[in-house]
Amino acid sequence: MGELLAGKSAIVTGAGRGLGKAIALRLSAAGANVVVNDIDPDTAARTAEEIRSRGGVARVAVADIGDEGAVETMVATATNEYGRLDLACNNALPEIQLSELSELDVEYSRSLMSVALLGTAICLKHEILAMQSHGGAIVNISSTASVRGQKKTGFYAACKAGIEAMTRVAANENARKGLRVNAIQAGGMLTPALTEMFLQSEERRRQMSERVPLGRLADPEDVADVALFLLSDLARYVTGTVVTADGGGLLHTDGATG
Image (cartoon, rainbow, N blue to C red; front, side, top):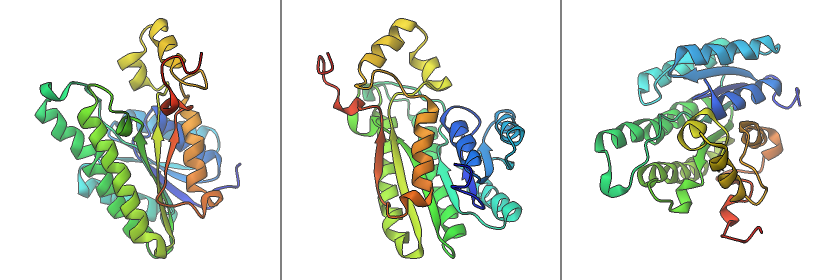
């Protein structure tokens, strides 16, 4: 595993905690030199320090990915520190607020879009520019909310569906440059954010786990392994694809799993 990404450099956005942190740690363990991005300097620094404590190489790039200048600086951190950028995982997301569309908070929705959708587009722009001369691989993090039609997820779901659409477009535009772009449609996961929102009680955690055919919610490492695969040469013939990693959750119907 430690040789899979040997000599590669990678950016992971939103890597201060949760899934982004798990991906940064996994890429480092596979040999990549990592730029750890987060808007929170303290959490980014802790992730970078954990990578270093395990023998890896990491640099911190504090940036709001909705700010194009900050994203340019983040990408420059990779190219200046490591010589070039080979890999990127766009994961950053602000705090999620759920509401029915009839109760839409317009200002919050603008801020969500500026990071989740526009911010991902800005990252794609500058990652592609940094990779187009030599190729590379990019993974965008989406959610099964994009296709579920769950109540109260409307604008969040729309942003994630937009990320999947951009993934396909970016893959098509850049395939002949040796640049692969894919997305992961993640299901319920035991991240700090999801725990704070939905899983405060053991009963609620049990109920959500029972809806997953594999019988449990994902650990961040489960999805991080999918990101590692897509970013590695093991997925060298995979591009423009949205990979669902939800333990079979999209298969669920009441009573179907006993």
